[in-house]
Image 1 (cartoon, helix red, strand yellow):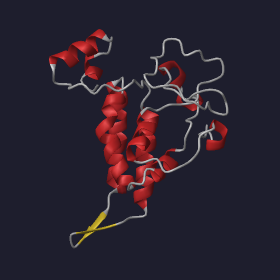
Image 2 (cartoon, helix red, strand yellow):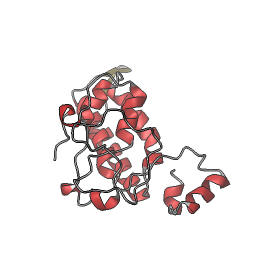
Image 3 (cartoon, rainbow, N blue to C red):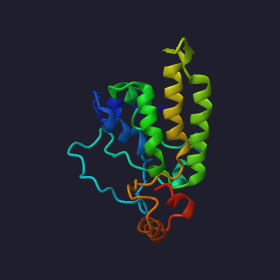
Length: 189
């Protein structure tokens, strides 16, 4: 299914800035299906929006059960390419920031591995040509960034609110265990 258009969701399109764009991509929020109560989903720590979307349903991180099978998952509330364009940054810079911050948003290490695999594969065919020490922009650069950002959204079947704790500290390891997160995934949170 295609992502809902901004007029469908009540969201206006505007220049976002890099960090706002990253948040929109990394949280992997989707429009919940009708009748979804959200029970069992972690509550949002953010303040509620003043203006609800046109559908009356706020986008949110959805549980794994609603994200598989992939062919029937609810739509995103944004178009990823438009978010990258509105970030006021080069697409390759957005992809670099997504790569750096993605592990904090993945609840399953296998999902993260699928994302990293796609990043590496696309990096091979989307890499720039080098001549005499200068980079020459390729027409594949925009396509590569699009595929890499979409792979973030496709691979994360267990989205979680991010953790910014030091993964090497003993407190972070016990926090991951207390939250019921597997040890492999806790290393990435």
